[in-house]
Length: 129
Image 1 (cartoon, rainbow, N blue to C red):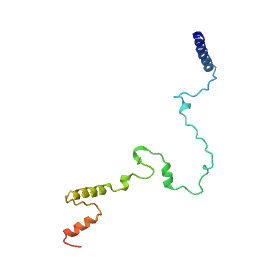
Image 2 (image 1 turned 120 degrees about the vertical axis):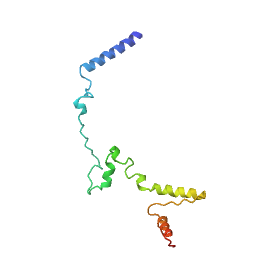
Image 3 (image 1 turned 90 degrees about the vertical axis):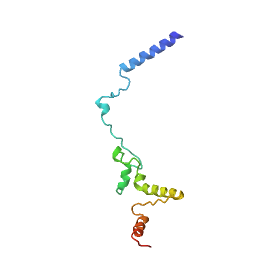
Image 4 (image 1 turned 30 degrees about the vertical axis):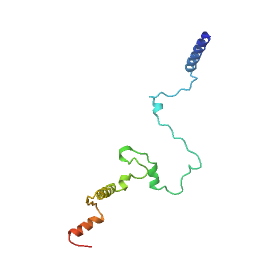
């Protein structure tokens, strides 16, 4: 039985060598050859959704399809970072004032454009509402 198994393995090895030597195996370009590194042709896409639009596509739709380029783009897509849209400093300031108010500490918080900024300016000038 062992002889039969050894003979089968040897025969398969010889068949494999013969297969490759005669060129029956499909040859592919090597990893470092020019044919391997050459850009492949893009396949032509066919289907019901492949016809072009009758109207121009808006710029914000094109922006969703632009690939990310690393450092120069915001990595949260397709819109904007939350830090750019939400004034987190104002929210933190209000929360700090609320916590300190529950502790009985008077903490006057101000930010640009707040109603308290104009109120503080009026009271310091001696004008009462």
